[in-house]
Length: 266
Image (cartoon, rainbow, N blue to C red):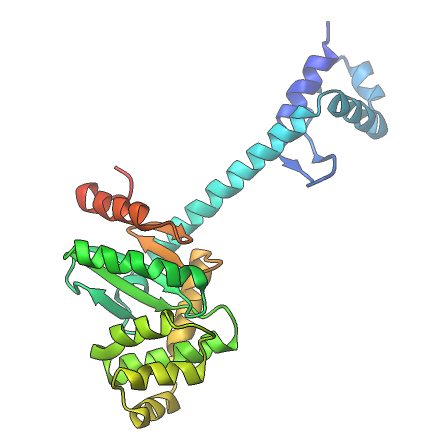
């Protein structure tokens, strides 16, 4: 005898898509393949929709379970795409000529940070980076200018690129001064931070007349888009993308795992 509730339960469980906040968008009623021809013919579109609606009202947990599964699959797909993007972009990610290297240039593990000078979380995360460099002499840190918080951030990044071009030995001091300053980072505050650490303002202006800053920022925007970055700070360790200011302990653990087993989680 055909068990309709059981068939509907199987059918609902096999649904592959749900319209968010609505009922099912498309369902394959696999469980209804067994009924007799006369019964199947009687199930027109309206009848099937009514049966499915009634079943879901009586068993609403099916919708929650399906949405949870959809969310899990979407996150897994996004992570797979991100992993592939890291692999495909490895050269520009780790070895671009348009980036800043701190720590040990020949270190055995590289930590990449995408940051914005107006990002409060980046300011707090700066201490994590400094501590990592102090405690790990074999850590290589790559900084990527990723101005996402308005025109002032773009101007500060442009000055930073110029500093790295004309006085790379002073970039570390400039970076700390500008990142940790109070108030908005912009053209004026960035130039002041640069001249305060000994960079010539004339040299800065000449460097900023070229297109190196624009090309550098565009390169980072393109890379960030491929990696699916949505904010700062964001990090890359090995083939893992880490979103947000996760703190010293998590970053240290991932670096240590990379050194121990070649992955961020051993």
